[in-house]
Length: 480
Ligand SMILES: Cc1ncc(COP(=O)(O)O)c(C=O)c1O
View (cartoon, rainbow, N blue to C red):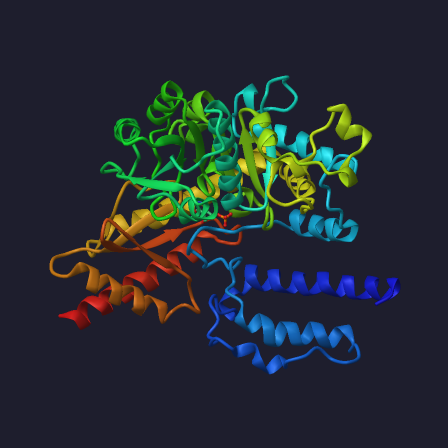
């Protein structure tokens, strides 16, 4: 493709995106939310690429008609599954720009404009109400860095925590180290423990599914008596199953007195800190006082596309001490001067996606109030759905509802797990109309409903409730 062709096909690509969103906004019923394809549906594409290039238009058409036939439409207004993964037109345009300059930005020298990351991370620290500790520009030790995923944010936190304890104990032997997480922690903590070959202890939670300080303290005492070295707690604000929030203040006090590193995983809920009225529920004071680091997925509720997780660290040096390796071929005057933060020293990869422009464009275009309005709209829609469920006698809401997430099931007596499994399977028959996911918490099988897609309006929530209510009644009648 030459430059002129790029221009032509580029405009065409924007038209295709425009048409897709026009349909999502005006006629979403024409698009099945979840595809009906079977594994292997792409075998028709053949085993090898064409020997000679074919016209771009026809590739676009095949991609749309064949490949995207298998798309689960996360931007569809009737998507209420997992957690949102929303984006914005600002982010889409910026992705195109970033792709065009394709800069790995592993050091200041390799991309001086990567300095934008430090600027936007300070903006986001302000947006979320973080204390000066987490700003680059306030002459404190902390600041924000972008990670490709929350899972990698957790990896980086554990690396920093491990380095801190090994240096403090003057050893490189990690065999006694033990990580704490809870029964509700996302599986990425268990994966991190596996990646590092570190011991992990899963702690129990209270009736609100929150990890408590006294539980952590008890585990520390027991493990120390057994010769182990507890060194990091992975707490969560907004667990994946139910949105539960650990008691950050209690856990923080224990971590502080016992010299443990406290990392907070707030992959989904963290973006809600933008709204001052939610900050008490989301334990902002505890974050500001005690968190050594926190990860928040902007690619979930934060209006930017994938691979944009913001991670705020109280002491950036704890990360760079652990991750800085600078061979001769990466050395340069700026790095040697110590005047710059090289992003290769803040994450797992060397080269990285230049994600900060996505945050820059989105934040400038939405403004703080526009961003808050997006969060509040999603919560309003989530509460609308919850009110329907609460008012309907066949359902029960399980666990403390959080933000725009409702976890519910069919109530009653008998084998409710079996009943609700059937209910969910029956709901899945309507996956062209709406997308939902389930979870199992404390042995209870339940259905999750979460809003957050910018395309969703009240009518979509109302339609979803109607389907859910009809299927519930059908399930109950066929079980009788
Ligand atoms: C609480 C929590 N932590 C971590 C993750 C993993 O996020 P990522 O896909 O960015 O690694 C998720 C994903 O939903 C999550 O809900």
